[in-house]
Length: 69
Image (tube, rainbow, N blue to C red; front, side, top):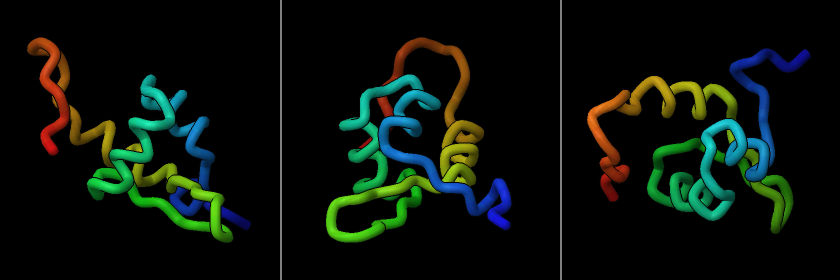
């Protein structure tokens, strides 16, 4: 029933997709770069659609510039 746009992944899965550590994914969520859903008091899931938008918005090439905070 869940479509790709509504699919949720764990912090670890999101980190693997983005090639960053889970702590960085948490930071992206807290800064509003990724949309997350809290399931219970400790479980956080990231929307795949949000990851796809984030990847599309990231510049390609041109050196290593950090994501602005």
